[in-house]
Length: 490
Image 1 (cartoon, rainbow, N blue to C red):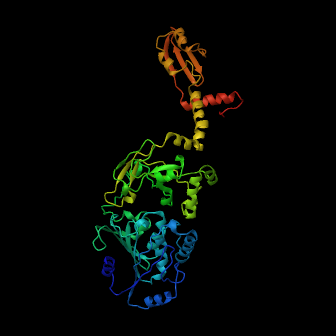
Image 2: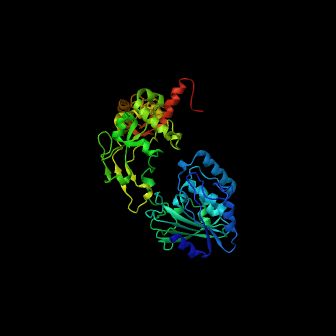
């Protein structure tokens, strides 16, 4: 095996192999008492046999079970979390897969100075729930090497995940320790390689940025345009039970499920032969096999009364425990899906292939009446209609109402050399005529126009400072309050 050759190449050939297996519940195999996995009477004998060889290196080369957190029971998850916290002082997220618990709790299997070699999904290097594993690798052991396979080079026959080999020694890392990161190719002949200081890894959130020389990795300098600058990027819908909630259209119609409880949905990209998916007038894709997503927010008692066939279908799901699943049990009701608008652009998951597909969907046009029904149920719709829009019209009215002839247009009509009578014909009678001056003043709210007359009684100057919209609004509000004995002014 390549993995065996790789280990024997970097360490002495005198080794003792220990294999550990576990089922989806985290049990099975022999484990030290209190490790978190089920133990049997052979565990002490196995441990004694391994630790008795002083000259032999102790290795762990397990392939831990790849089980997502959805399939780990709540009580089992809490039990494993408590053991990890007690043994290692590490708090692990409830979103972590079983392999994360497996790696951490297997620390009890490895003798001091022993070597651990793990083939695990590489997702822990980037996601938040991988922090526990990264903390273990940087603080509790001496991390030696991480090799990431190309996404297209799938290492698990029963799981479509990107894989990595993690090698570490059970000892504390020395000062200024560096970790070897490789990518692509094989363990013995990688396409890219880089030594990363352990101190850098401890403050780096995404480890897949290394090695930087990897052709599959691009590290932005912070100034380059990214997809997030152009699009809102989200994962696809997660139902928790696709076989139950996503059914062919003909079958959905046979259950008499109302159209308002059904949404068109695209199949897996491997079942799409075209890059642009057109939609029928009813919003469903033009594909040989049309699938529907069941999404209903009505209570069960109402469905039982009004839609008995649909209710019967939901009962079949309850008989199979669909409503007790991780996602379904956290929804109210359990058969309601995430509220997500259809995305016009689709990409294959995680770009697992070098020529990952990009799809254009034209399914984003929901029927008008369906969109309106959903909109009428939103509180922010009524807030906008009943409060925001009327308030906006009131503000606009206050800003531009009552301006009268004292405005910019009439001010521009006043020319030098006009007589007082000609100006009054434009602006009306002056509001104020200060003593001992040849000035005339017109006032209307916050608008004030001043005109200077010469000795001959003709215009020789004019002035007008148009108020800002805020100043105009403030004047009107203050005037309204003043009539009621209040004022915004101090």
